[in-house]
Image 1: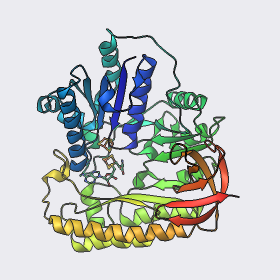
Image 2: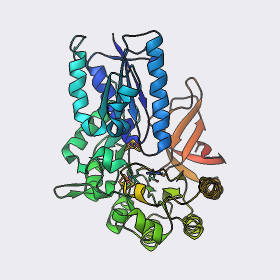
Image 3: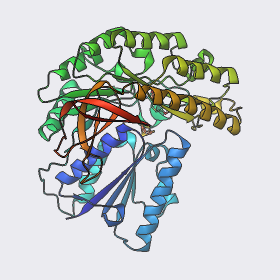
Length: 422
Ligand code: SAH
Ligand code: SF4
Ligand code: F3S
């Protein structure tokens, strides 16, 4: 059998795309290889969100191509995703050995290309169980219309499109058939989902009725569209996990305005208050960046004070990275790199202490945990997640995959809770 290997960078959207394409390959008679070295077809799914993400993907592709040139010359290398969209054929020109570059906007093309590529090979349609897994990502929208000043995503993924509710339901049914218990609905801004009369609240209510589905997660929520109605809907739907990922980006009104985020610090705090009023034990997480063009020390201190006030469960924190052709690329990037690094360190140190305290505060309480897999194969530690976003480990000889169990939290180590069955 011919074999494939996927190397995926970037966000969960890319992970979902890779999984979908991998199952398309399986249904066409392909087997998954153990490493890129052994595969007939290597697909690298790339990210462009920060320079660092592009550098990592490029160095990886360079390595794979060098290995191919040294020996296995008949290997096929495809580069897909967001950097493929941004850089296009220059990737193939720069790295000899890359056969095809297919950008994120041409996702549909990929399957056609696949069939054309496979023609001489085996094209038997096999039914496979490729989609096994307790948790599955389900894109409910593609693209983004928000054009935050720093962000490449609308440029590489195109305008926002909501997928039809019926198609979303169909993919969830098929995941459940192959053993999934939890789905994570994906979009750059899930709160703006709309298919006819069905908005995001409506979608959650519909999906809640699917038999066999235990849990529903969703990400990302744009603070400007996270309404109290949505929060109330979520509070009333037991299968929907109580985790809100609400990227704030900055705590300074001046910076939020230049970023084109369309909310103020006060608006953001009102969203947080609404979440906590209806769901007091919700996990709230965020993304933020330091060193956006024009960010003064006072602006940074606003971000820091917002972090101290909200006390997020966890946060992703970045140094602003200039992306060509975005609005911010034309702004005066005056903050020195030393300053940016110092601000990032201060923010990370602050958040790390808060995260530790939040995890510690769970010790002694009972958590409802969905178990997904063993920590390592053959290991008796099982990994799961509580009803918010916390990772939980439990030692157990029996298989726990797919079960939701009440767990007593015994201790916390960093960003993991260790517990036992109640
Ligand atoms: N759609 C999501 C985020 C997508 S990108 C939202 O609207 O929040 C994920 C995170 O990467 C962003 O939240 C932001 O914090 C960060 N990010 C995006 N562009 C960036 C850039 N140019 N430099 C640094 N961080 C960036
Ligand atoms: Fe980027 Fe803003 Fe769209 Fe998120 S909402 S993907 S940060 S443009
Ligand atoms: Fe995701 Fe990176 Fe593209 S964050 S949408 S893979 S630019």
